[in-house]
Image 1 (cartoon, each protein chain N blue to C red):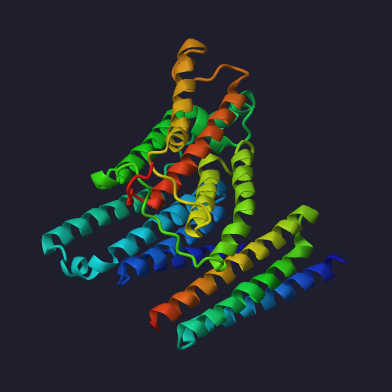
Image 2 (tube, rainbow over the protein chains, first blue to last red):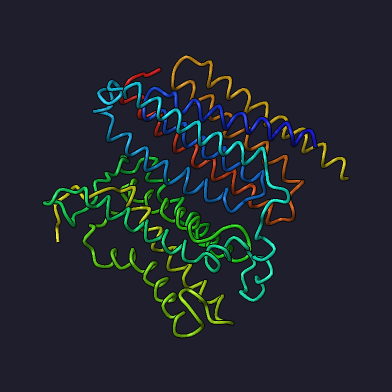
Length: 315
Length: 97
């Protein structure tokens, strides 16, 4: 018991220390490195709290894909960084920011330190209907059944984010290939990794998606891994970055939310409302949605990191 | 038998922790990037390798043991690649401390 307590206390201290270090870091690049380390430590903390689903998402999306996004952003901003560091916000602005941050901190502390007794929970109600759904993982059931609307809107937000990134392209480059440049020497070590890792990574990604029905895992974590493999292949220069105007690419991106919406509207006709699944078909429908969503999210995440178009359209 | 396996685990994991400690000390104390990378690889390869080796007797069946070995192999692959990339960047961009 005490050993576990020491481990948890050390982990908590480390998380806070890395967070402070990240804020205090001198350059954007160092801050991103701190942020990624922070995410991985946070994932460990979630594992200690027995929330393995959250831990996987934190490691894959919060730390991995977001880290890649931030690194590319930091690399792009490097030339203009000294100027932006020089202009500090004024004292009133900093006071307001500090006050707001303290309010959030105080609110969260109050929630943690003065918990309602007994803590309100819907867990038993969520667990009761799991057998009917044929989904063993309560988190997946919440994401795709009880709160399916939230999940659907999340995917639409991702789509909007990608449209936002694409809109940054100048008019003459619209529909061209994103600015991601292969950073590998031909035949170098990244080429080797780009050949060795994707076969393993793709299997792991699909496994994480599939196992999400009965154990920690699911569409988001699986697709983050698939996106990482795609990005690795593109960074290694083994496959070209596709032009954003490609019909197949746009179909893949839209397919997930579209299928989700179609199943949602079918709920009006068959059972009794938007996004309700007909009895006995819940599990197959959930699997179809998850599979298509995984492909779409993987493509969207990869393209988010690849960035806006920076080349003229070839075709 | 159980005690013997547990002893092996404790010994190997402790040895792994020593390599991690040595690697971290090297990372903090060595003067330039290339030597720091050299220190890191010790933690990655030997440290993690010994930890995995020590955990094998505790593994829940052959599949779980294979998963542990796969984790080590993947970490090796990623570690070796990143080390090469960082070293190349250091060589190209000059020494930065």
